[in-house]
Amino acid sequence: MDAFSLLLDGFTAALTWENLAFAAIGVLLGTFVGVLPGIGPAMALALLLPVTYGLDATQALIMFAGLYYGGMYGGSTTSILLNTPGESASVMTAVEGNRMAKQGRAAQALATAAIGSFIAGTIGTLLVVFFMPTLAEQAVKIGAPSYFAMMLLAMVLVSSVLGASRLRGFIGLFIGLTVGLVGLDQSTGQARLTGGTLELADGIDIVVVAVGVFAIGEALWTAAHLRRRPLEVIPVGRPFLGRDDWRRSWGPWLRGTALGFPFGALPAGGAETPTFLSYVTERKLAHRKGRSDEFGHGAIEGVAGPEAANNASAAGMFVPLLALGLPVTATASILLAAMQKYGIVAGPTLMDDESALIWTLLASLLIGNALLLVINLPLAPVWARLLRIPRPQLYAGILFFASLGAYSVNRNPFDLALLLLFGAVGLAIRRFGIPVLPLILGVILGPLMEVKLREALDVSGGDVSGLFNEGLAIAIYVVVVLAVVVPLVLARLRPPERVVPEMQEVER
Figure 1 (tube, one colour):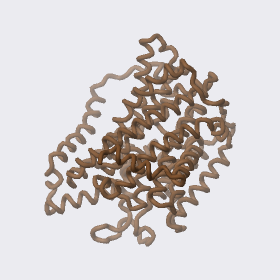
Figure 2 (cartoon, helix red, strand yellow):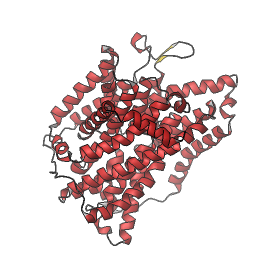
Figure 3 (cartoon, rainbow, N blue to C red):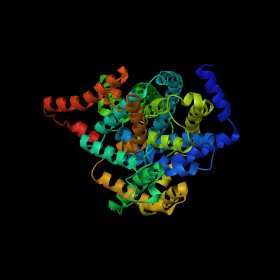
Figure 4 (cartoon, rainbow, N blue to C red):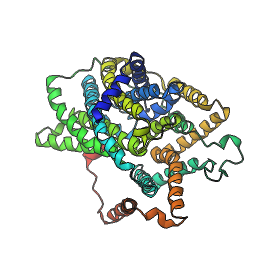
């Protein structure tokens, strides 16, 4: 049976009134949380992860599809109306989107972001349907040494390209790997880093880590830098696009999609690079058309392209997540944690073990993407009013629901103490500019890497050469070395860059 036939079966399972209701609830909840200032889709998912407990796996994943796209949409709303990106991938949307809003074109900026997100998300999800089964078939042939090498590559690339410096990226990774070691050794049963505390014998729940680092850390950071003056929210009418806006947007939507999906599908991709490339591409094309002076002052192409690239990359990340079990973004890490809570093991055998569930999830992504446009586009003025909630009350509510959610996972008061601890860690990494993704990636992939490392060494009788007995593994290690060494060499050879005033404006 081909992929599209299986996708139709997924639609049959997803298109029931009950499942559609869960998808709609997910879209509304995801948008509600994602639209709040400073909260990106990763934090929205972490905060709402406990909401899905009590549902069966299919309903939970359908709801998560809605939460995922809702959180993405909410992030673009705050970027445009408040110039406050909830994540780094929304920075380029804020550059032109907020200027459009200040010119009285907030409705057009929100409309091109929403429609572009829908188009890119739909095309990206269909590409996942095409590529993911093929990749999964090939991944079955990959042995433990190559899997270990791929996880190492993902960690190295993510840690070296995010944040203000590579050192800070690797510090975040080291913290995450250390947290992942807490608990009983799977082979010997020996307690590791538990300090004699029985509550830590089973390890630290990823939900507690994610909610603490994202939600509690963000709330503490905001409280430490809270400004007393209220936020200036730009009024929003009903989002719409005129004929000229449509003409100027459709090209950037398609180009952004073409740029975003490959980066998301790479095991260590992410949306920061394609959104920036999309912005630069649209700026150069505008220069050829004699409209380059509009960039920096509210060019609609500067919103349409990066937002499409962001959402295409978000769809593309399902390829390595489902086929290889490798999360390449913080949001993907939370989704992987949600799947693990239901005993779903992402990786090469997933298509055989949970075929019906996965095709239902892919169909739900398309449904959630459509519901996002149908439900939330008319509600844009309502979401804009949420931004007027005073920050003290807003973050007090976040603290309450984060604590309630973390406690509900195991109903253990000890988890609340851990939540505060990781909240302090979240505050510290924000203070010192340490990226969050390497930390979360270390917590999730660390134990999996340990399993693959031991499998490879067991086969070779404990000989280190067992890590290099596959051609793919050797090729990946070469890439790892190049990823670490080449940027260092180029940094020494590159002459000092002269800062262009226009780019200073973009970075702000």
